[in-house]
Length: 82
Length: 146
Image (cartoon, rainbow over all chains, first blue to last red):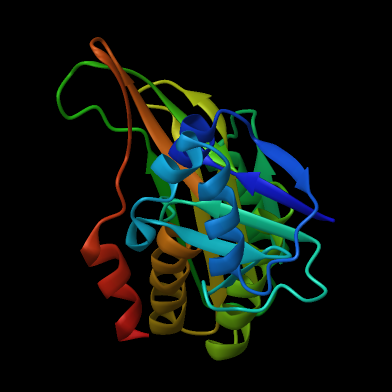
């Protein structure tokens, strides 16, 4: 079980802020492929990975990172703080 | 070191005075305050979303690095989220060190990293609709100088 969180326009496109999934995905890329296969709104949100960032257990990570032991995955656009 | 991620407004003047009163042995205090700008004159509000938990840990890590690298005697970051009106104070940074150059550099470092490594997202609510603010290439580029 993994908690998946969405922020900013990723949240708006998918239509929810978070969900808990049962997945056998080995990497972030695998998880994205699973989500995109589920529904069109996911495919739309993940259509351009260059405009997305991912955090694993609240630390910035990469799409090829393994999901083993990860409890929280977050997807969001590049940050605009300050 | 003090970090506050908050929805409510803050008083930058009072915060700076309290910060300065709390540093001992520092010869220099530098502060920066970010304000919601309305370049087109049509902005109704700026909505700031953040990632509770990661926001605090990411900013704390950035502050730790600044304190170590520039031997700061004290550092402060306040960052708001929620709906802010044009002219409202979004955030402030303050640094204290023995010498001026370290305080200035550390404040710039904190600002550069807060821009693209702290999980905040800004949305401009205008008269004709709302739009997410895009990250700028130069903001990412700014990190390479550190």
